[in-house]
Amino acid sequence: MESTVGKKKNRVSRPTFEQSLSELESIVRKLESSELGLDEALAQYELGIKHLKSCYHLLQIAERRIELVRGIDADGKPITESYAVEEDATLTDKAAARSRKRSAANRRSQVDESGTLF
Image (cartoon, rainbow, N blue to C red):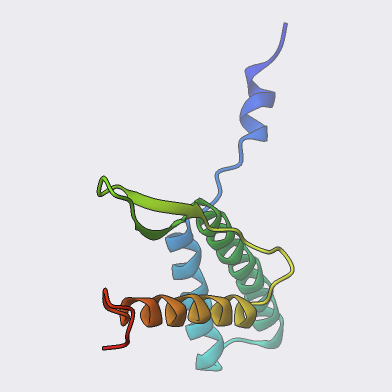
């Protein structure tokens, strides 16, 4: 017979993105106040790093769920593609890629039906 206590121990409730971010902001305020001793400051710093990693992890999960709207088909339905997250890409690389996509989309939208700009 299997115990339900073991199952409950395996279920660790993780904080939401908003909870982790709020905790991280609180820790930053404590560290900036300079009222903590060295040991407590180090402990808060380590806890802040854990919350920061949690926020990044939750953001990566959210990014994987996003679909980009590329346009509208003849029936008026959106044409979408999955947002692919490169695991090794830095935030700077991701921002540059998004910027290039936006710039290309803006250039395409400036072309009228005759194929000329403006």
